[in-house]
Amino acid sequence: MDLRILIRRCRRRMSTRSIRARIRDYATLYYYRIFRRGTFLLDGTKYPYFYHLYNRTWISERTVEIPIASRLMRQYDPSKILEVGNVLSHYMRISHDVLDKYESGRGVINQDVVEFSPEKVYDLILSISTIEHVGWDTYDEPKDPDKIIQAISRLHGLLGPEGKLFATLPLGYNPFLDALLKRGELPFTIRYCMKRISRDNRWVQVSWEDIRDSRFNEPFPWANGLVILILDKSQRDSRTIQCLDH
Image (cartoon, rainbow, N blue to C red):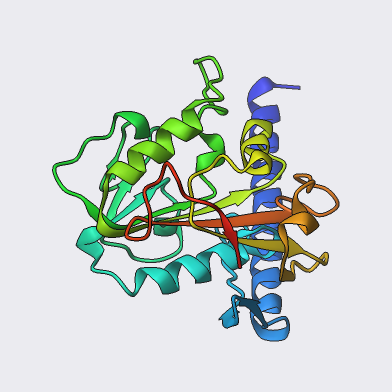
């Protein structure tokens, strides 16, 4: 068979498969938005589950991370917000600063978090499922278990006197991070814990003991345990903060 004909057939089949996959995704999205609408509770506050085509949020922790982060953001001036990891721009319009070492995009600052030294401080720093990659997904660099602590220390230094650092961390992805959490060595003031409880991606707030040994991609896809940490700079010095469960 002529090679050009074979290539055209392969392209045609790939295109057909892509279209079918896209149709399935749209159908699933609307199924969840129409028939599986629901809410979850975090610290007594009700949030709607978030469904979006990008990264198919109906199968991952994004379904709870995005509504929590977006509601928090609305309390702050966008010019005083820094997002570490280019996540939210895939789901909504944003006007705040975004820092991401690898991912390019409009307005994204491509710089290592531990080297980032802007000329201003922030009232809110957000990091959605990003800190677990620091020092772990290093591509052509050796893994650096200590870099997570360095990154959080750097971000703490970028907060204004009343600033807050908000971070979501999926358990089971980075063993170095899991070990830091188990030893209580991350300098945060408040810790919330959430657990995925069903195949259709329902989440409930639980205690740390309920998720401390959670595995990534088991038994459900993506995170099965999620830690939400908040560092409030106005409360205590980061070197002496005790992590309080809520």
